[in-house]
Image 1 (cartoon, rainbow over the protein chains, first blue to last red):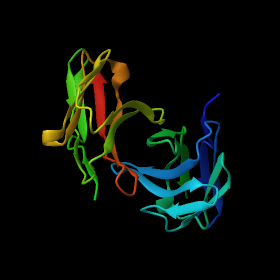
Image 2: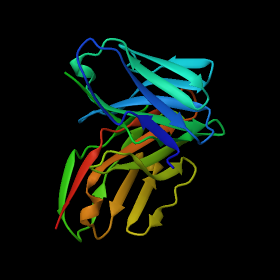
Image 3: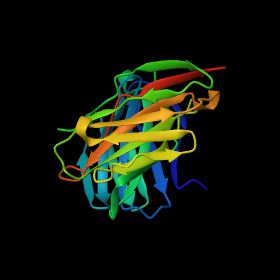
Length: 113
Length: 115
């Protein structure tokens, strides 16, 4: 089984809808991250969490919110989806003892119409 | 501020050619790590290698090799005898351990290996 899983893997939604992307990990890592990838722009950090009580904004957090329900779960919400949030979203994890290496989930492709 | 530059947006080669993907980085941290990730057409991000700032030894893994040079702030990736399965987008990334500890990615190089 994959160490970092994301659900759904693909999602189509309409402008204005609220949508949640979920990430779960079995690696026992305490740090979790959400990134989005747009063609030609690489990956950009949306939010990150160093433990259950810690949530931090990344470089592009506007229009997004997150919830760290447990050490193993980190959800990303789009409160009111807009077309320019169409992207590939990745969850990642890292261990506080080895914070330099992040392990990525398979990604969620989101299309906002 | 930290920055990773992959100047090559796209590269196209014929199978069996050698190809080098360039990566230049900027950081003020004395301790940092550099990475290469592969993103095949299926979309997942595959970790290839991690290098710390104190280890400038080049590394070889099969057909892959990496050349880390602090003097030029570069961490280049060479694929020898390329194969069609090497076609992917390759990302170079950097994390510095002197402050924010955020992973910064380059914009990627799309490699196409033609048969």
